[in-house]
Image 1 (cartoon, one colour):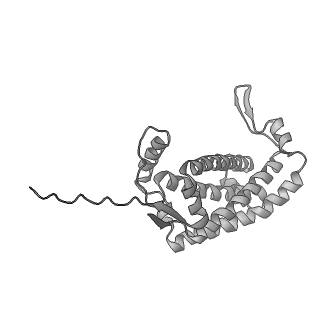
Image 2: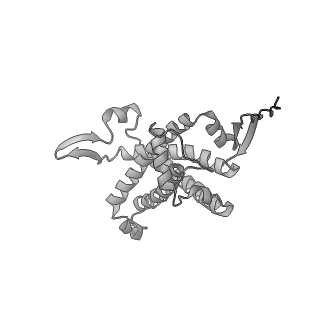
Image 3: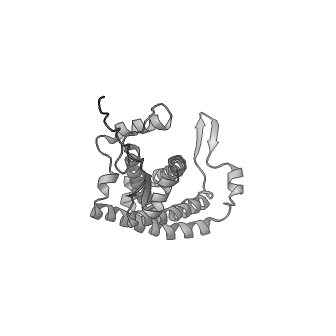
Length: 230
């Protein structure tokens, strides 16, 4: 016996799937821009442990000498990213979907339980209505990251026109650093998100495409008939 569970409204699914290619182009074009000036690295003292990004990475993705192209793509898709994000926030508040997305007082405890379950330490996953505590925290964080990317991006894009914003961000260099850190955060979120989707299985992925899940319901057991005493 199967049961249909309606999970994601059409608007949420549209915002989700539209944002995916937009964010992809934003990261790709950002790498084209970053090639022209690559200051970030991880080092201890004078020893460089890792440089963003190694030459083999730059060459493999053909990022060299494409600064103008990267800026053109980045500034066009910046507005698409902003519009899609603004419509998403507006919809969640008008529709009431924010109640399922924003963390509550139980979310951090549930997130710890989800982590233990994913690591195989806890046998059962915590109960959830629509999103578990870890998802609520992650989806709210990615929304705040989007706002941060917009503000730091404007501070970099027009540091003179938005001089007040650039000052609040700690200056041009700090704004660029935070913009870069947020981009790395998107990549990490994307990788973890894909792993979680693969772990959850097809039914969970289908819900983000069709809007519903198909739950297999086990048939109820018929209680044994009472016996008549001899």
